[in-house]
Length: 309
Image 1 (cartoon, rainbow, N blue to C red):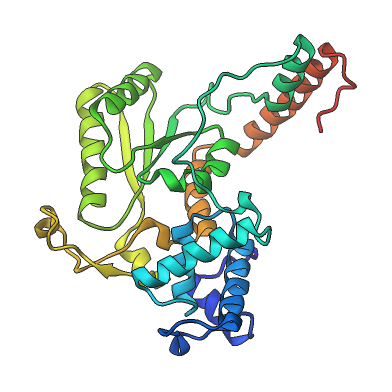
Image 2: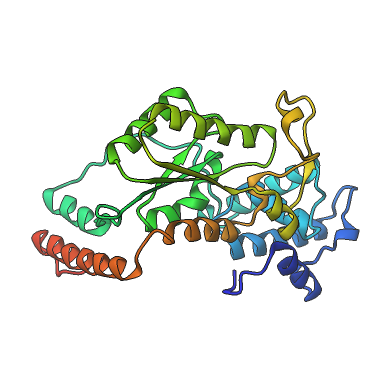
């Protein structure tokens, strides 16, 4: 995305007007697509992912509906999902452009020698940005699949990313609360989740339980997304709120919005803004300089030339 970071609607409308996308909202095909139409759709999907990567498949789908590339139905989602699978298998779309943190391998890190271990340590060595800070920050995410979209930001700012997967388990919340209590500093918890009965209620339960399990801790809890004002301002794709949800009666909106509907770069901007307000830019610069110097020392110990590729 450009530095201007236009809104989803404005950016995609401009792309359509400029002829970047070959589909228009009023020309969505509901019949079986021709080979040419499939190729055009996949070319448009490629442009979306290339501009906003890393993305989840569902994020690609929402951006495609905004652009009028596919219909906002289960059938439209299946088209996007199938296209992205075939494009990756054909080598037309890099696998790394789509994020999926729901499946991962559990295996200890091993090395062929002490030199290799030192080189790896040097490459990934990070100095804590928060050790001497006057507060502590965590980002909580409702959806595991979006972790790969948010983690580049939380990783770069040395912030914990807590994936709650909707309603977090009591064991997970107890461990998190214990950690907050042990730190003994004001803690800022930023939550991202769906704007629907369960998404809003899950955030409320996380806040309620953390406060109950760490009663002496100073906890500041804030939902970053999806907020009602964001839906209107960014013209986010909506879906009818499920009336079968037992929490629907307490939910004020007839329309729900998934977190995936917010374009990836905007999600990263939201998280970045929430984090950097707690950091001193000058202190960060000093820490990064010390980190680089210490990384070079580690490389020299490993017998390298003091530089990390």
